[in-house]
Amino acid sequence: MKHARRWMRCSVTFIACTAISGTVHAQMTGNTVQVGRRVASFLQPGLSGPLTAAIIYEPGDDASEREARLIERELISETAGASLRFKPRRVSADALNGLAGASIAFVTKGANYRQVAAATAARSMLTISSDPACARSGYCTVAIQSSPKVQIIVSRAACIAAGIRFSAAFLMLVREI
Image (cartoon, rainbow, N blue to C red; front, side, top):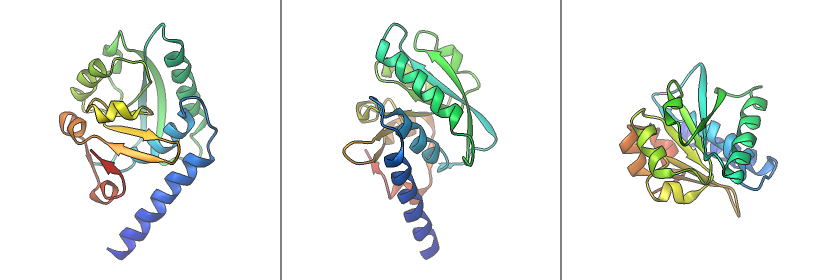
């Protein structure tokens, strides 16, 4: 138990340091991706192998499309030394049937969170956003806020709807709502 706590403290410190040291973008996508990758490693049962990561964006929304491109770039460039490897796939919020085969979804600001939640929960997908409102409303399972400090918000309602479980030790270290 003592070693588990020490390991968890080190993991959370790593998550925070990784996020803080990343390049800051308008939507903090670099931080979201780096921390999101670590968050996914705490899923129970654990994920393994190369995984498809959907990037859900709202077509026609410049900010959403820009955030999707940045997330895609981060996922492609962050393969060395990563515990989980993700193959990015952009999915339009208008065509959520493109989620088939994906294990995780990064949700950009501007996407219709309610529609995304319905499609991803049915597939038991972990959804990660940089918008805390997505998790607070129960539509995204995780929101990662980077400013003024790194904060990971886990939506209990979204986790239940999607059948997603995290390790108990991880849940003690994040804000669960």
